[in-house]
Image 1 (cartoon, rainbow, N blue to C red):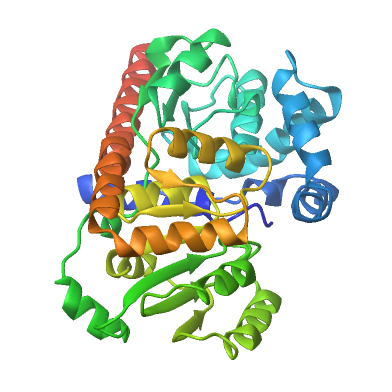
Image 2 (spheres, helix red, strand yellow):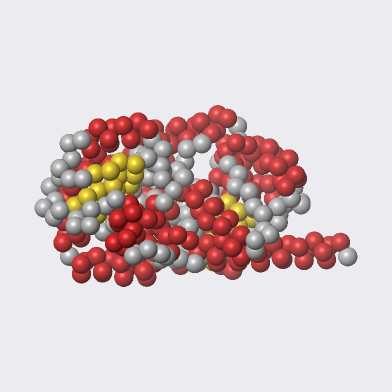
Length: 375
């Protein structure tokens, strides 16, 4: 089901952190939508992508309306109940000490599961954006990990006890937190020209970002540059971008899905991207200046406002403005350094480890509770 790869990346980062803390620990990443009704998966996946691409104003309206709702609607309630029942067999077989949700949908499902089954394990919700939507908020989730202090305040205002919410950050892979190679050696390994600025362009895991607009904007940059476009898993977008790349006035490499984005973030001078929560968190930790282009309505617009308001990113108004901003960042080491300092103030490189520690604490508390119940 296609709702972006960031949620899975967050889960993998926490899974790796748990294993690093305890090599004997076992964990499993599950796509919760496989246990939902098939029509739900298709509507959420195809409907989301189709709506944000073709009628973004409608999606923005529905998103805002859903956020203001004070209770779960009947359809969403039914979907949560249906999926929770389908998950019963899996949880009975695996007997997890803790269930961790990196997407709002499974968080709602597990809230319902806890209502249906008295032997439900503790549940943690990891919010993978810089602003929280009400879809995440449920009274019986045992703990939340959020990216910002403002999110903790917002959740408390919606009834979540403050002691259940930790400001840990968005978990990213450990490789984003450290650059093991010298930058010149890294650029040589990646095949980037040593005498040009490097621009990294990303369209998100689904490849629906405005990459062609970014490519056109770079054609008007006077500084010598080379660019990398990572299009994700969208094969149609990859073909379009590769065709457009033949007319670029600068060296441009087009890549599909890659598992070493951190290398390119460490090697590049600036990132042009959609402001997905995971991509933005990775960029903050990697310390690369961000220019956020055409955010999708809803969470991406709010992520953009949060990052721009804190000087960790820039947002162009149009293609000409994008050209100006890229030129400004590439021409000024002072601008780049200011943006890196702003990013460092927001970055949470230890998020995955801090969340892993929270999981361990909840698991230990659950084992103690069961022990006392038995004796």
